[in-house]
Structures are given as C-alpha cells and as structure tokens.
Length: 69
Image (cartoon, rainbow, N blue to C red; front, side, top):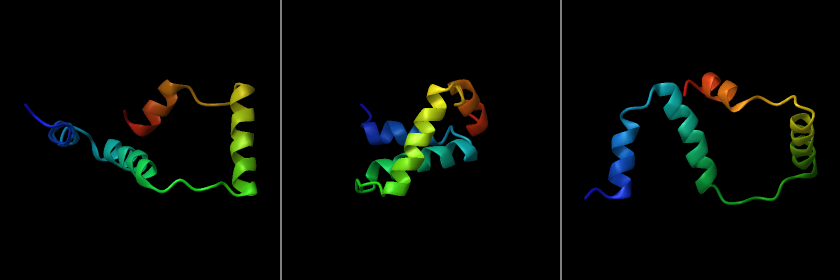
C-alpha cells in the first residue's frame, strides 16, 4: 500500500505546469509560519470580503479556468 506522500507524488506527475504553480502557492502558504496581519493588510482583506458580499467576486469556475484546473 502506498503512503500518502507516494500517492501525492504520483498525482503531481499528472499536473500541468500552471497547475503545479498554483499548487506550490497553496502548499507554501500551509507551511509558512502564521503571522499577524498589519493594519493595512487587514484593511485589504476586509475590502475583499466586502467585494464578495456585493457579488463582485469570482466564481469557483472562473478561478479554476484562470488557473487551468
């Protein structure tokens, strides 16, 4: 039986370059130490959530298409 790491490695071979770049960003964010947001960063995040609440965000399908998923 394959280990989870072995299974992931075999899946990586099936991804496109663009998909691997997107995955790299996700994985890096998972291993970085958790940091507190600066007030400026918190304001940007709040603005983003406000845009989503107003319906100005991207759909999951649009995100997947942009990332080539």
